[in-house]
Length: 244
Image 1 (cartoon, rainbow, N blue to C red):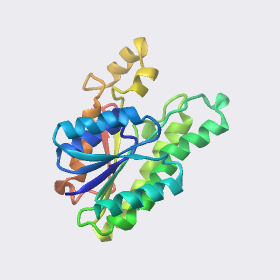
Image 2 (image 1 turned 45 degrees about the horizontal axis):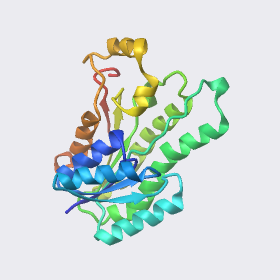
Image 3 (image 1 turned 120 degrees about the horizontal axis):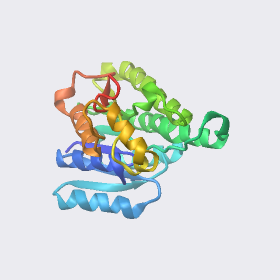
């Protein structure tokens, strides 16, 4: 059984990815930082559907914690084949009001967190015959967004990191790709896009709807599947045509 680890998997896009990979027969490590109740609900959903998984509590911004958790998880299962760097936060503010601590925290979680995960997992992925890394960026990382300077910078950084790791790890048959969602129905989107702003956004999306977490999960499912063995260094945009 292939083994996957998904960060930020207790809700939203991360939850959908974890559940989708479990349905495809992977054992899934469900990472969370603080909300154990929500993470346990994800695990129950997976096991009720006949899948397998376990909970992994650690903060992706803590490199030592990431190292220890990944080592223990891979050692317990004897392998690690897939990692999905999904954990993220958004601490929004216009540039002149942005706080240094919020900038640092946003990059620590969204960008450095993915770096810590990839570095810790690489030694185990090298032993897999189908190693896969997927990072979760955002349309904001490619086109920017007012009030999200830190978030956009972090998500843009993920794209550069993805392309670099794809080059570094290709000789060992490890693929590294990025999924860049547009506006997706999540708690985070609900906080930032509502009312008139939501209606205006819908008019900008050629497909005429805001996406679902399942839309993103389906892209990840493809990228970690055998059918994507010749796809690496790519940014897969799941945005309804908002950015082409």
